[in-house]
Image 1: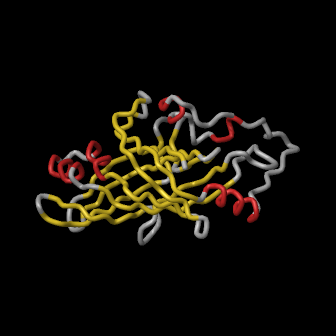
Image 2 (image 1 turned 30 degrees about the horizontal axis):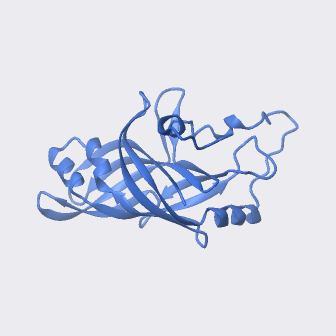
Image 3 (image 1 turned 180 degrees about the vertical axis):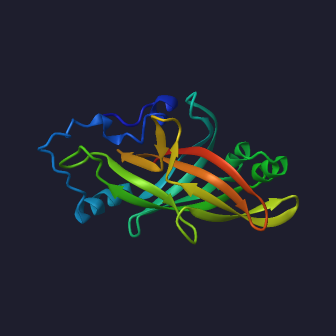
Length: 217
């Protein structure tokens, strides 16, 4: 299976949640699932490590499969602790998802912030033997998993906002997006799903927004 197409939309809306779709059917009674060994995980993360440049796609209409905007980003995968650090997560990517005009203005002018994530490599169900593609869950990390605090100037006052991410988002009775990614031939694509924005000492905004990062090293 070719994971990375030259055309953005067909690739980005490939169902990252259904990673086994491109594998042979191994659901028979004779199939025995064998998870990745520590050695296989080490080999994968060592192949993934390094510096990347690419795009963060946002203002995504998941029902129409369209993307509104994108921003240039860069990130580093560290093999020692299996982390992925986005050096320049664009705060403007959140602006279109909040209802408050004041918050929209704050995010549009919020610049960039680092965003650290943890990678958890795994073997998709239905696969066996060596994998050409690395599959992983990607979990943003602050003081706790899925909760990342960032500075933001709101109405001329410096405050902190907590970005609450989630591992999955149901889009219909039959489909969902998950906080997962793939790496193949120096190219990486992954979903990040923002659930809420909480202003310290202030309001909470429900977001439910999908971000897709894609790039190469």
